[in-house]
Amino acid sequence: MEFSGLIQPGLIRVDTYTVEEEHTAKHLGSGSSRVLATPWMILFMERTCHRSLAERLPAGYSSVGIGVNVRHLAPSRVGSTVQVRSEVLRVEGPKVLFAVEVRQGETLIGQGEHERFIIDEQRFLKRVHESK
Image (tube, helix red, strand yellow):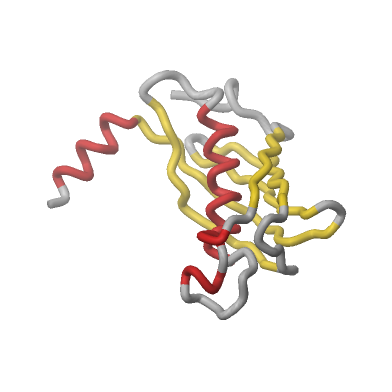
């Protein structure tokens, strides 16, 4: 299936998240501070990109993350609101490359790139079950 008609460079999505205790480095054990943990920042980025594609893919198709290259640049405390912006940079067959950034107000919290692969869900799950 050709996806470039459904998903094109320049496609933007912005989602808002509130940093909760479970999202902190202290809670995850990846640090001692009650600030947004890098794994959660990456999850927010991936979730936003996934949603961007999910809105446009036909039934039976989804996407999986295959690459992340990001930097966590500034802290966000518990209770703060962060905005995640994703923009499609390139579509190469089933591969979609996004630019991603996280901001708290005017402060850039994180930025980088995330790559996703569009899958036929039934075919994907069949491969998962066969790999046992």
